[in-house]
Image (cartoon, rainbow, N blue to C red; front, side, top):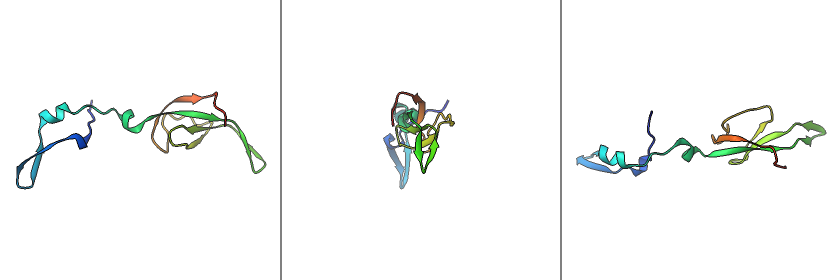
Length: 95
């Protein structure tokens, strides 16, 4: 399984004119980054049904990270807008 690290934390050593390398021993010391640390973990917030232009629309869900909406019939594990991994829906939320 691949190990993800922060590339900005790598220190390079110049071995010649314009040639730099990263030492494996230094790379091994860099802490692992987990995808959820970068992407974030969110939760779908249930928004009650609403009326728009004299037409009723069923409940929708909103990402608590970026405020993007999806239809209630959509069961997604990731927000299509910001990429946050979703833990579930908060059915007690109010609009």
